[in-house]
Image (tube, rainbow, N blue to C red; front, side, top):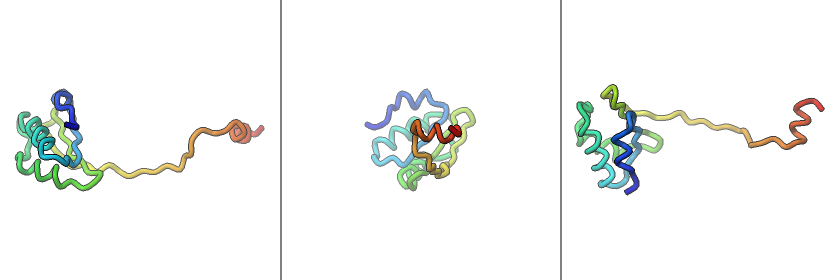
Length: 94
């Protein structure tokens, strides 16, 4: 088992990616369906979790009884890491 199911019951917001195994999907769906009015049938949720594309997530807000799809924005940085002493000296003008 790759998921800590006890911690899921304490979380207010769930972000679930594509779950590969039937056992993982079954446990997660059981945990979500046991909450009141998710707005999605267990069969729909199973199909959705099984067929999610990479970098897509099903989000579940337990406080608002809302389920939605989320795709985070892709970002890239060209920052290479810490500056050397010589680079700091040049940046300071000295």
